[in-house]
Amino acid sequence: MKTRFLGTLEVSEIGMGCMGFSHGYGKVPEESYAVEAIRRAYAFGCTLFDTAEGYGKEMFYPGHNEELVGKALAPLRKEAVLATKFHMSQEEKQNGKTLYEGIRGHLEKSMKRLGTDYVDLYYLHRVNEQIPVEEVSEVMGRLIREGMIRGWGLSQVSVDTLRKAHVVTPVSAVQNLYSMVERDCEKEIFPYCIQNNIGVVPFSPVASGLLSGKVTAETTFEGDDVRKFVPQLSRENLAANQPILDVLAAFAGRKGATPAQISLAWMLKKYPNVVPIPGSKNRERILENLGASEVELTEEEFAELEAALDACTVYGHRGHVESEQKTFSNHWMKH
Image 1 (cartoon, rainbow, N blue to C red):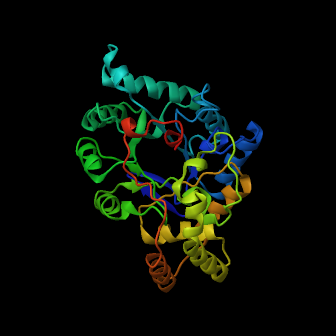
Image 2 (cartoon, rainbow, N blue to C red):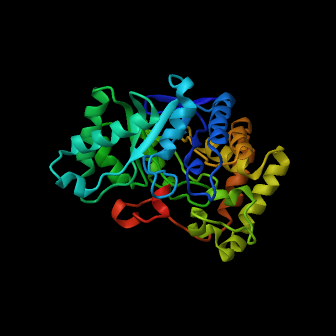
């Protein structure tokens, strides 16, 4: 697989979101299945694996996903790029610890679960409005100098927040919501990131399955499946967004690809600094998504696809700016 850069970190042009092996998509698979799926992704060419301290097996087991990913990648640690995320609450800062001590405490626990002595890419999962992002950025710079992390990032942020953080310690990557039906990042995030050598790592790049064409009005989401809360997947919006799926299906037929692969190939063609991390708990779907790296759109095909998408109206918009105060709920914070 071709590679791209997140700051100075070289990664496969498509990464893997690992959350679904622990929660967020209903019943989770057996550990052996998940471990094998992660290793098969690596064998396919994927080197970027994304997890978080908050991705737990049910609400009582935070850190489960980090343990799982660490186990799967233990034989491949030097070749893999590990990305994980943390939350920082105001209460933690008030209990006598400095911000550095608090963040380092989160990092040390993550490293223990991951079975590693460094993390390649460490994200602030959501900005806490009570803790200046500049202070977090300063701590990240210290952790980089100490060799505990190689780079750092932010998730679901505006360009103003990103700019404040980047001037203190250069940001490697921004993990924001971005797909054919969530394109706000095109206005300011992508231009700023390209100009400043920052990678953009879209989560839900296939819009929680919408762009695969496999989700229908009859699809049911059980248990902790976060897709119950995705606006585009409501019965009404599924019907309203059908023209977008028709466009994808037509291009997929022409290219001998799947709609999901076309949606990923589209963003890879559009931006040189984008590294999507589609997530799934299904081994075949994981390999299908990674296979988008083998689908190349010509300039003419890309222009035609862009024009077709621009002619469609998107129903069910979420946006990419969220803070811990605004979104600390059981469903959205799992992304």
